[in-house]
Length: 198
Image 1 (cartoon, rainbow, N blue to C red):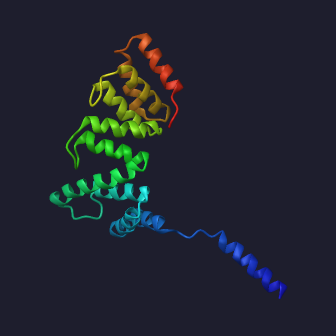
Image 2: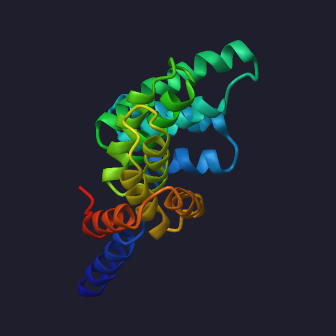
Image 3: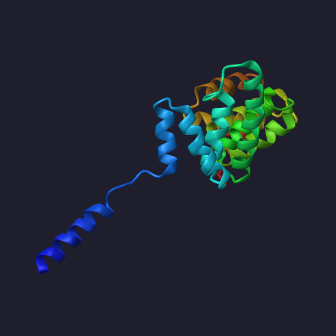
């Protein structure tokens, strides 16, 4: 009897360590194997329950037209739907969704182009340390799109993104440095050195 209890305990311990894929992992696996309709169904169920990662992935599928007929009218409607799901995830603080929402406003995909709104979402992603958001916020500052042109702020955001390996950010920083005074560059470097993610 003792041996049987010991065997059952060992079996229970072994099974407890076995990972069972959940609905999100199943949707991700379906997406990875190109089964977009299964992935979309899985993400939708979770997205409707409020899971930000599922909302973001569902938005990304709509934005790219995965799992939909490749018809221009359908894809235009899908872009609008992508914005809905990106916004739900972004409002829950998911940096990737905030960045993606910035992109759709920056490029006018599924929404009217709005640089102020794009800069707002890029900033939210940037403040969490999202390198793409930092790069694009730097671009907005360097051009004066959606906020006042400010090379010091642009340089700072480009530097932060470059530190994470964003090669475009490093090139952009070097480009605007030629338009800045040594004092401005020093100020930007100081700001970048003091910056902390929120």
